[in-house]
Amino acid sequence: MTPRSFATVPDDGAPLRVVVVGAGRMARLWLRTIAASPDVTLAGVVDTDPAAAVRALQETGAGEVPTGTSLTALARAAAADAVVDVTVPEAHLPVTLEALGLGLPVLGEKPLAATLAEALRLAAAAEAAGRLFMVSQSRRYHPHLFAFRDRAAALGRPGILTTEFFRDPHFGGFRDAMDHPLLIDMAIHPFDTARWLLDADPVSVHCEEYNPPWSWYAGAAATTAVFEMTGGSRYVFTGSWCSPGLTTSWNGAWRLSSEHGSLVWDGANPVTAEAADAANAADAAVPAPAAPAPDAQPVPKGITGSLAEFVRALRTGDVPMGEVHDNVRSLAMVTAAVESAETGRRVRVDALLDTALTEALAASEPPERAALRAWPGAGGG
Image (cartoon, rainbow, N blue to C red; front, side, top):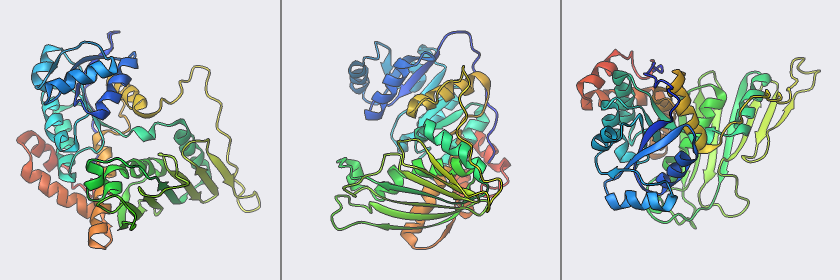
């Protein structure tokens, strides 16, 4: 699947008017981020619980804006330019379809959708509507990760990229009870980042899960997944959500072994690089990060970076990171890892995508179906 062009929003000097759908804990972070941005203004908040929307506005100091239970009614009344979807994954399909049907671009929280088939439907719906649907893969937005990617380019062909992720969060609530808590709720971030750092897509995966006897999670909280990537490199993720002591950063600890040297990043401090000596590789020198141009802007971290790129994409037409067609592959990594863990076998991602395409065609509406049928096949196209 190739990212498609989308309608832009002309820059008239006024900030984009956005409606936030969802008023839970994550919505509060988005409301504060929107309030701090000069590029957008909050036009309204939609939630199935009207009182929750009011509370979210009060607790974040986001101001007095319209609230309601209907996205269609509120977006039209507020003359919205875009939608920020902060609902639960099961609601991503109906909320995004409704927004696209109104002709509004969407910035959504991860995961793209609750299932891979629903993700393909949303990619097709964005195509049919000619509107941008971008997923906020917020952990890509870190200046040290950008430096990691830039410096990796000087090391030649990548061999193995690894992420170690060890934390012991006591969330309570649904995460403690869910199946595959680490894979489904967290692994999308490093999986997506790995695709970006390697500039490669997943071919297959073998994944094993394990729940230590002291785990407070019902589902397996420890995971090791080995991905074959296009180009022949490997990506290895290993981690645990019940690992007390010597915890890693929430970004994980990264290492890249390449043709002419290696890079490491602890998830918080600047990247460390070491090249092979000149006797073994004449072109192995790893340049230090270039000094930024005097007018260069630093990479905004987290969802601030996601929001800024969403606005820039709508103003310029440039395809952003996290565009739906691209992000499908990141969700496919999670889906394939879960299937591998459940079946104990190696799973090919193209076969998984082709099965999802068949399911999406069966469930889709006519505008989506036409776009889906035009694809040469999810695995090959």
